[in-house]
Image (cartoon, rainbow, N blue to C red; front, side):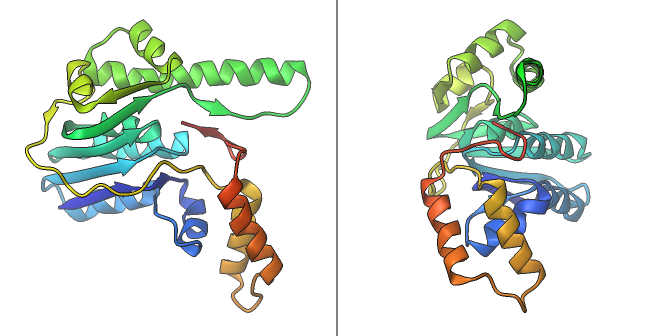
Length: 227
């Protein structure tokens, strides 16, 4: 069975907002649904994603690791959280593909105690993500964290050399889509309110505002941690 992980990796509760805007995204429920439909038969997972929400990515990773059948992962583009998901099984990657690892990012608000706790949480999240790379490749934790610290972009051959991908693919699927930013919490809330109550349509001004914010979005991680 084929399972596609494409576009932004988002939490289950945010998927409707991306669908409303016609934006490609994948949530943990999409992956778990695919796993259930496979019924133990080989699962062919195709990844083309620039990442997104960290916890959603970890949920996808867990779902694929828990699958009792064979998981075969085919990568054209796996960055950030998508790279974590790509480590969940045996994998191949097209020759012109890209694999990227970097530090987890997020935001917090409060006094210096809150900022200290925020920093500690980000560093803990970095180690959790690095563990996926360590388990897949056998590299040392220090090496994985160093790659993340530098925001490392790898070609397919380099990803194979580092052990993050098992082999180069024999064929090349069509490549589409560029890396995107996560929608801000305010945009998602406005869209979800409209989807939940179709009789109360989003005012045109609000819709235009949401589109504009998406186009010029610079804030990341308002909801949680992003990678």
